[in-house]
Image (cartoon, rainbow, N blue to C red; front, side, top):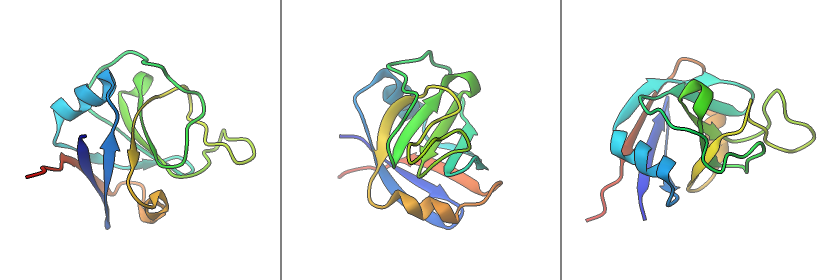
Length: 125
């Protein structure tokens, strides 16, 4: 089981990666730093990983981590986006879901546009 640490502004949490090609490629690229962009209850930022769609989903679950192929972006979903209807969580276009936030994803509501985001491996000794 692979875990990552996500630090965004004043928020720090861990997430568990799935066994997918997308998760593998992102794991190999770590550590990654960027600046948060917010879009509704989603944080995203471009990462140096270029991948095709892999079982891409048009609707995701609370706390999912997604990779958005058109923007080579790492996405954290913690609530509705501007294109969501009712209580679904809908990315701008389908994303590769590659992991899930451990604990409460609503902590990301504290993150602001432009906050520094760092993603790194959690080492288990």
